[in-house]
Length: 101
Image 1 (tube, rainbow, N blue to C red):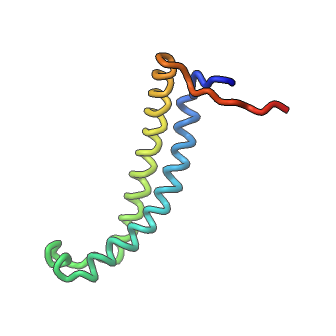
Image 2 (cartoon, rainbow, N blue to C red):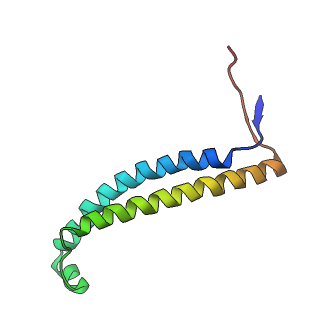
């Protein structure tokens, strides 16, 4: 068994950044389609908001969700790696078994 004693913070953050972009794209597409459809097809909700959602609003939703997911995942990668490194010093790292050739 080998032990992961430390995780590279920057390399973890980069991987999480890519996950954030991927999830942000998926959720951005979903949100930009669903949110305007729900509001525009519900007259009571549209009246409470003052009007229906304009067509260009979907692009703003998409971009906003993409940016938020990307930032949150990037920061999660940094925080997660730092926490792992701190906890690994206290209780030991994760033990894995690697196949040798």
